Length: 331
Image (tube, rainbow, N blue to C red; front, side):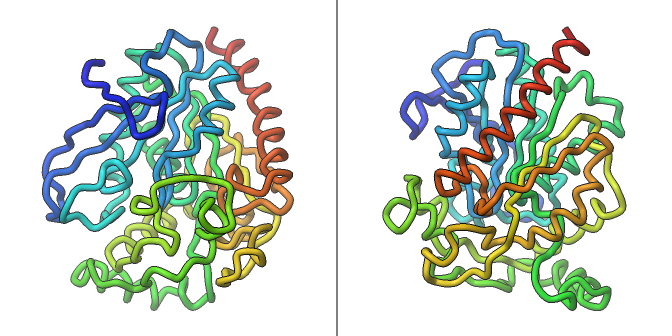
């Protein structure tokens, strides 16, 4: 595909998709596909990575790991996120997660044209919710096979709303539905002073370097319209999906309460309730493997070194099966 330009990450390239006017009234939308390397040779397997909320692609360690396993590596910054955010837009804002389908399928078309490989989709947190419903819709259309998608890895997917049970009650859901339609930009949670983000970035108590404008330490504001879209998607997932492909779910073995002191939340998921991930994992499909990672953070691949090494070992174990089984079924 023409139009590739050097990315902000050394050794990576990116191309932008024009998506047309935003149905939520925030101007024209664009999405950005990032590729490891200036050119991608033909490969039997490729990866498409999809980030979560207050996130974008920056984890080159993860990309290098998959490249060493023989995957052509791609990641997408969804519209209004990271590289794709434009002036005047609310970061990450949408009132319907299904609107991401267009850019995800355009990314698949680029991968098919360039690498010709079978695609493993990877989704983190809210991105895990987005891709699970997207793949269920692909399967319902009978399009999974021709899309090239052969597997799914979810990294701490956001499968339910954390917090007190009243937040998930029918009256609260109904109120959220009404408010989300008419007051969609109203902020229901403002950015914090740090917490989880301070355990990640190297300027604080973490190991990783990334753009704090695109991934602020305290997160982006959460709006009524966006959280309503998340709740609708989670409710659909709870009724049962079939992503149509084998899938692996990696998560922490425990949650920790988010506090300001990063040293107290280095070992555990400070964002989601891992019991909810365990509860709803069976709703993803009928070929699901779930592996808890001891002391892992919300993003298991940004955990402290020993937990991160465990996450990569478990991922590799599943990849050994995926690569062998995929070759036998589709070779």
